[in-house]
Length: 208
Ligand code: GDP
Image 1: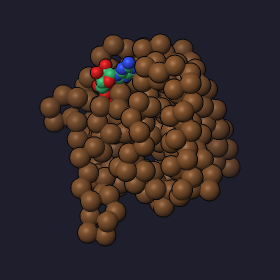
Image 2: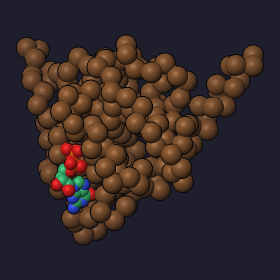
Image 3: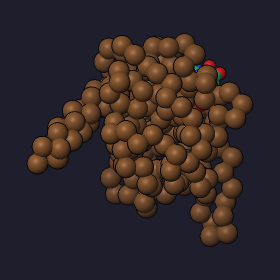
């Protein structure tokens, strides 16, 4: 994908306040330090784009970036500090859960996983919650430049095994690096396919 324009479209405190424009959107989420800002900057070919999400007061907001005036990239807060509720289910914050559950323009969520860290309970809990709610997601393994091919394969094998303890099917996955730009084309191909379908559907409904 050629990135012509990326515009910061605002920070919003809840799903109710998010822009009501018919654009397909894609959310990015993961534990703090997973490499989310670096990945967003790499995808958008901007050095400091996601810096805006790290400014005081914005880290706990839903941050919107409009790409090529055609789709929204949504930077969600990290869920690293989630508390476990009484029912032993991790809570990822009302705002995040509300957004993921109710946002009508949301096409897919990219859940970021640091490939250098063994499978974490908090990530598994989050994925299980997504599955329970029926919210579509794919996985993006980050910082893969730190490992050789064998190491990547071993880490992927471990992660998939962990998921298969709960899941019957594995989600689509992307192997990425903000350093060598791995995964960029694959992620954009995925987004482009969904966007095309989105606008076709929109047109069909519009002209009915
Ligand atoms: P965030 O908190 O999820 O937004 O994470 P950042 O993008 O700020 O990255 C956290 C740390 O991981 C920083 O020190 C980055 O330089 C480093 N990092 C992020 N992505 C990569 C990557 O693809 N490769 C390597 N080697 N380091 C990365």
